[in-house]
Structure formats: structure tokens, C-alpha cells
Length: 178
Image (cartoon, rainbow, N blue to C red; front, top):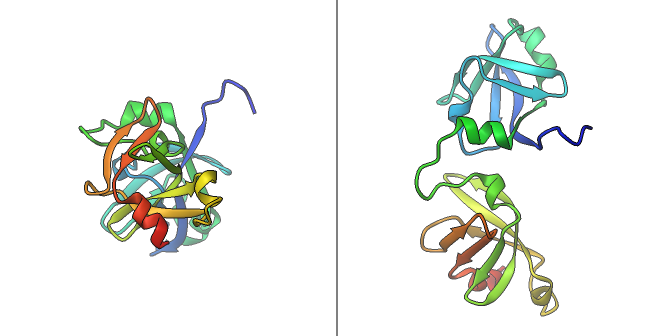
């Protein structure tokens, strides 16, 4: 791997074939489905794949060169990747929106107490949850190793992506109840 190669982000996983023309189920691992537009290219273990069509309503994608279910089936379970740089160039964030890769790794505080660090973001239903790896001082007090905080305004008070710090309220109560 070259030191100059940009860090790759998984943005989707290709599922099973659907229909007769090579369409496939697409399982998003990102918050911006608008990047899956015709002509968009993503890296995979099979090389670069180009999107011919994408239906966000049905989560179906079709790739250039995979016209039949038999051809498309070779892509099942492949992960699709892009770079942070490409994502920042192509996606325009609104006020208060953040890329998941800017939040993962952030320290989570309630007041002066460090609850832990965001290890990943999970989407359950329509809500995103911050998966927190509990701070060692709290684990020593027999708290759980990890817990989830809903990414909702009544829990998440402030996000500082530059300082990699998130301020929450009610997080310690969730940790205790976990």
C-alpha cells in the first residue's frame, strides 16, 4: 500500500441480485445516498465499479458491465469504498451535519466527565446511534465496556470535529442503565 494513497472509507455493501437486468440490493454504510448517482465510481476488491443507475427508494443499484443476474452475482457481498477527500469534494454539508468519519474517534463528554470515545455509528431504524467505547476509569468502576447514545438533539449538545470532542447530556444515565 502506498503512503500517498488516500484512506478508503466503506460506503456500501453490495447485496443479492434482484430482477433480470443485473440490479442488486445496496446496503448503505454512509449517510449520503446522493453520492450513488449514474457515473459515480467506487473502489472494490474487483477494481473500480461504475454506477449505471441507483434507486434510493428501493436501495437497488446497477453497475456498468454487469447486465445479467449471473454477471451481477459475482459482485455479491463486495464492499464499496471511496476516499475522505472525494467525499468532502462531492457532498455539501448543511449546518449541523457531519461526516461519520469526522465523528468516529471523538471523545464524548458529559460536563467534565469523559464517558469514552465514539468507536462507530450505527443506524437502527431512522435513528443514528453513537457507539461509545467506555473510558477505562468508568470500566474500572464496573461500568459496561460500551454503550449507545442516540444522535438526537436532546442528547448531543455540541460536536467539535476539529477538537474531536462531543458534548452530551443524559449519556451517563444511559451508561449506568446499560
